[in-house]
Length: 208
Image (cartoon, rainbow, N blue to C red):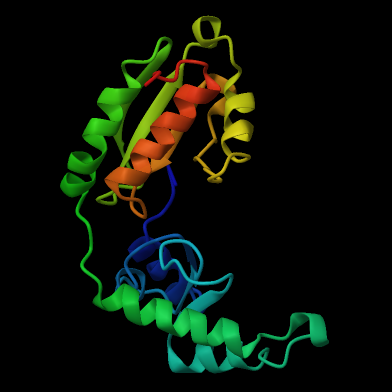
């Protein structure tokens, strides 16, 4: 997501060569921005920001969407899209378009007690970080001093997936002792559960 053309710039190049511009928006949140910026087709994950079932959503110009629709028959039974998946994605999109969006400032307010609690643990440093792509998304960055905690970050990440609640983090920097918590789909009580599980795995849980 760094040192690349903007969608507007890419659209100019595509038009110059009479080519359609397809944007893989994956987990992006705005369902209008890239189309308005000049993309002919925009592809979103149905299971990421939209929080639907494993699926995808294509938005774009009628001509190109019609070309995409030619694949709806799929290749054999294994590639067939089920009615349940279609209904689930439709409901998720309807909810996504009508639900009140949480602002970055609201995310920070929600995660602040979580960060404060994490910073009481030995060998743990937590702070607010902002989305590298410039979106209004705040996350919790958690850094572990493995020499102090005595637990490898990769080991901790795996352990958190195995408890009563399966907890998953953004672990792209786990080899550096850093993970990130995306708080958009959790509430304050759930963040407290995450804190308790981290403290348990590190052997620093508070005794009643």
